[in-house]
Length: 214
Ligand SMILES: Nc1ncnc2c1ncn2[C@@H]1O[C@H](COP(=O)(O)OP(=O)(O)O)[C@@H](O)[C@H]1O
Ligand SMILES: [Mg+2]
Image (cartoon, helix red, strand yellow):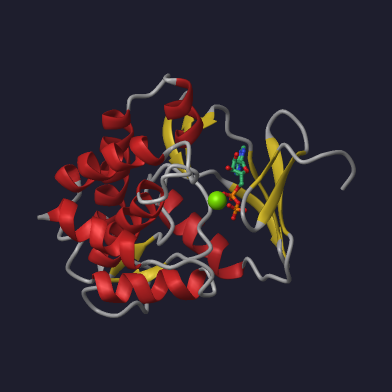
């Protein structure tokens, strides 16, 4: 790939191929098979996710979406904090209503497990969800709890420009979220700790979720 990426996240770079398509490439060894299967499954059920055209190894060619991330839209003031929180809650609710793929444990639902304002693009077709590498079947309260914990991590970090906004979004999200986001918080903290390889303390963020959920 030549030229700079269109955008980069924590794990992948995204390059424009043309007006319609992007290449998403992991910066580490990766196998996108399960991620692509999850995206195609939910996309086939009408969930707002980019279409995947081709996948191999750590590369995926997918539909190019327009618009800002939810985080960018909130920072620029084109989206209110409360509307952002309502979108997060609504996207999780809709996802957890979908039937999981065949072979999933009975009673389990599809979880995204990284649904936060950097992984939602505010497109002209409405909010769309990207970055499905953690998707798996499970208990929906894990998914809503993780979204809350990620918002709380920013809220408790006062050096972060977005700290006050994240605090407000957390409160609004918890008021609108489906299920019981604080029910499986210990498990959520263990999951997030593994995801971050123990690089960030999570106690203060977990306490903030509990305080806000009361
Ligand atoms: N289908 C897409 N169309 C346009 N931009 C995208 C698309 N997918 C991802 N991006 C951009 O690339 C960034 C990183 O993508 P993401 O899948 O979240 O990777 P990471 O795992 O590194 O966070 C996103 O924040 C977004 O700006
Ligand atoms: Mg991402």
